[in-house]
Amino acid sequence: MSVENTSMTTEYDYSFFYEYNETCPPDDLSSVKDFKQVFLTPLYSLVFILGFIGNALVVCVLVKHRNQSNLTDICLFNLALSDLLFIFTLPFYSHYVRVSRWIFGDFMCRLISGSHQTGFFSSIFFMVVMTLDRYMIIVHAHRVARYRTMRAAIILTVFVWMLSLFVSLPDFIFTEAMKNDSDSQRFECDYPQNSTVWERYDLFTVNVLGLVIPLLVMVGCYSRIIPTLVTMRTTKKHRIVKLIICIVVVFFLLWAPYNISRFLKFLQDRNIIPSDHTWYKNVRMSITVTEAFAYTHCCLNPIIYAFVGQKFMRRALQLLKKLVPGYSRGLSDSSFRRSSVMSRSSEVTSTNVM
Image (cartoon, rainbow, N blue to C red; front, top):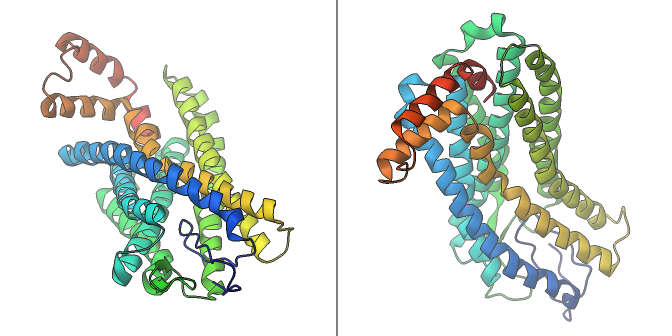
């Protein structure tokens, strides 16, 4: 982060975990800062509440039925844990946005930044694993069925978490709580000053590992899965095809705008593209908005990957029936049994896809 003239205030873009060089007067960016305080704080709170409820329910259901778990269930369990790790960091950044300073100290700066990145990457990586698992079990079922063992699932889970931790290590090691250049009483949580190496590293990992590669895997695998499903004799194939398309579209629509906005900002900071005051402010505003909507993906994961599956939905209803008296009073035992019988015919397909 560079030091500007004394008549200018360095505005810290605390939402994006990397520094930038200020080229705009503070008046031009004050509206962006005010928008963050008004927009991000309640949205982070909403994402935290909805994400915690949905992912915690996924964890509870899968723990309760752990003796019946397969590779898909283990991936769902770890995906929910990844999202929980991610959303637990949001209250800290919500406070950071609201007061415009980091008050939690250097250790928490490193821990929260690293946990945030670990939760982000592990969530993406487990979605990729689930996509590859669907592809193998549907397109090459006769070859891989015997390899989908509990031991293989545990090894794969450990590998994904270690990979996520490794990619996020710079945030654990190099981020720090440091004084603001213009206000010695105000601390920021960021990479060290003038650390362009880690700025580029962060941009590369988030764009390539967090968007480009996962999207290519999803498109490639699902383009093979859909024709195979269409030829299957199941009444649920149209619902499953629509669900697959929904998974790819939602992932792209939520994450692509954020990554594109960050890349545009990187080009601005390197003077590769024009950076007049209006364009500069608009790009930073777009990062704020697109980042907030991208973070809502952790709320949608339980709906997309878990609650749409009939087997999982049946288990969730049974758990809620025990935990919340009167929750399923409107569901008669006969209707619940009838729904269970109807879903058994497609349970194998639903399990493989979900």
